Length: 115
Image (cartoon, rainbow, N blue to C red; front, top):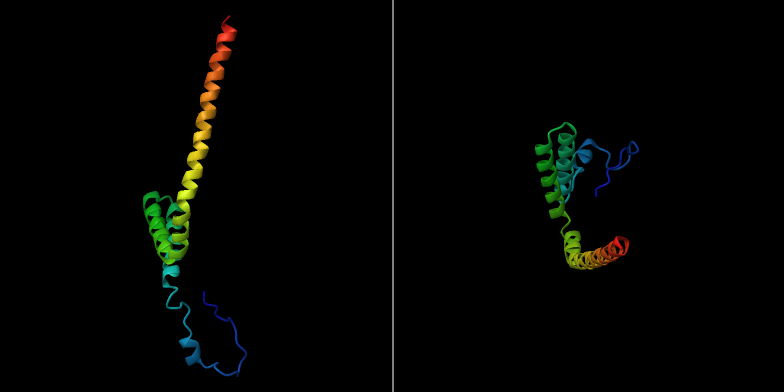
């Protein structure tokens, strides 16, 4: 992230208009972040204006560009994903066995009440 000072004291070294023209607002590596942010904002504006298809496509493109910019983060998430899937499968397995136990108990209760 590049920090650009808003004001400089007058008369100091490096305060000429040539020096101000050479200060880049976006660094060479920041163009992907800028493109991702701009695309995401454009997608949200389109969604807010009721253009759902165009907004979703634009937001998806912005997300893809952001993922390209954050490759290390995406790699970390990708490596952690199998653990989350396993935990979710275990949770679903427990929920399924609980539902089966509930069905068995319901049938027993039905038999008792039918007498």
